[in-house]
Image (tube, rainbow, N blue to C red; front, top):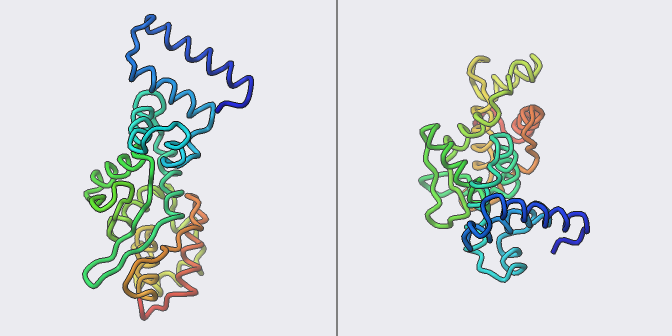
Length: 234
């Protein structure tokens, strides 16, 4: 599983240090398994594999893989807010929009339960709630909740500093808002509403694969609004 010779030596050194430093034989069977899983995740790059792929590799159930991954994050490798944001943006590349007569939702597919729970906790802090009842690996957010979350993750993007006066003028017309009301949240929601109106009912790609997490995303969202959404249907 670990092909590089130096990484194999690194694995042995780190395992023995952790195993002995805690007191020889003190680690339980579960703790020893978790330590091995953590070291393999780092040195054999297991994080790039899906739960199913890793289950086949380790010959255990996908449920056990999920549990190991979650516990490993808690004990050895907790993620920063920036890393969670990066994982969230990556999840948007595979996101869908689901629309019926009474509601509009963004569906986020996020396998890593640690990241998923971190996003749900952030939504709760923002006074919104997500739904994962129909599939534990998919977070369902209404447009308001999703736009609020996007605004949080792009909180360092100052609209009037990123966009020039000409673009701001067009945005004021497209969104029918004053300049001080134009936020990343309002741009995101207008984008989603425009996509939803064009597509009608059903489930389809959210078209957010271009997002990078940087300030350039604001201009990209604007260009899509300008090209595909008229003032009338916003």
